[in-house]
Length: 477
Image (cartoon, rainbow, N blue to C red):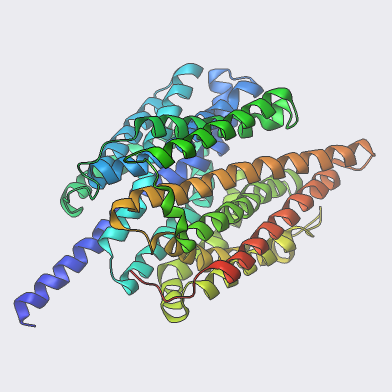
């Protein structure tokens, strides 16, 4: 290879890593917004006069559109160009963030949050497939997926810390306005760094019926899940909504089996690693949401940590995830393949949750919180990369956006359902203990123990499925 060819190769490699960083910056903006709002909810409630019941829609409006449009967003990228749809998603999310930051009424904020979820769904669904396209070779792809995995897994806890800082130092509007410079920077950099390519599925038509059915099914399912605690899980309303979601899903599958150009080719799920990764993703997300949200409640309500202290408590796990995801995880996958790192990481996460399941009401950070955090950071840092690689490795380029949307939907639905069920169980156990005359701190701790224990079972089951069903292979294109 002559000097000019080597220089050209180095420049191309440098540009694609810069493109990866830009894509991950856009994804980080989306991930942060799923948790940064939680810390500011009391301030938003006071400022705009929300009731306890209506306040939840500041979160739910975002979750509803985000989960509902993941599959459609990924498929639109396959059909009309992933670069084009990614940029459109960033524009929508950034403008909606401006709307949230300027909101002066409840309706204004809730509508802007719903639009934010729509933009976030498109960005999340397409970013993974763009990364797959940028890094076709096994070693580079494993490293790139490690960076992406770190952003996805650590972004939530970073959001808690950032939300606490912005709300305390400025006010709640800034948790949304901080997205503006990030969004503009991502847009500008993408214009120069993302390659312009023809959509692999260009020439196909959008399956409109399939899009309507699956989006309606997902949105109705999420609506039932997020309202389950309030209306009752066995209430007529919740059961009707969940039944309606299943009926719509069944109609979607029937329509896809007959469609000439289906939104979701059902044969995609004959890819064993993709199908297994989605099941693992549901269980993994349920376990991780148990860690993230339930441990934050334990630290705030039982150990009486401030929002900033909770964010700092997650810092050791974030640092470990960073060290693993940004290099070590890629080496482990390249050296040992997908199966063993996936199972080992999930086993570590299960052990970390089991430690939280025995943490006492008068627990201390060094003895009761830190060891569990370290194990969970180790597990997340090792396991997420193999899960994503298993989901995407066997997928054809024309279905990459859809597969990305599918795995993101699995994480989203698993997390939403897992959190709703575990939070309900924790609340029920805590209420029963308080009714029996136990102190509030001890009752809450007992409820959280149940949630953590079930989360540990979720992670352990995911590890076992990975061992039994993931096809043994090195990371392959």
